[in-house]
Length: 131
Image (tube, rainbow, N blue to C red; front, side, top):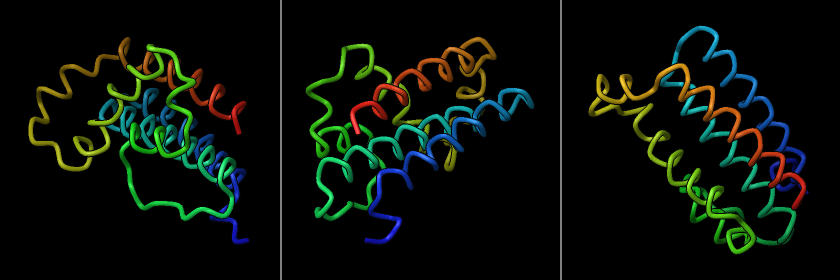
């Protein structure tokens, strides 16, 4: 099995992305805080998918709710955790292709980004425990 098919590979990447989100907060690169939080949860969900179905094919998708559903973990998630998936999902696209960059940047305050990181870290730890 390649590293790509191992949960540890995805969890390591998710932890790295969380550290990057913190670094982006410290340098006030708020657009990328959301993007890196999305990336961290995407990779954590891929770890859960690989852990729960080691022989399955890992899809090349970025939609958090779809990954949560495919892994079977969504049924175990709280409303707050599911809500966070909804918050993070558009930040994947908006960070790369910001159609409304100024409005998005205005919404990503330091406080909101700090809260987003805390919630992402908590969700990451919860998903990791499910692997």
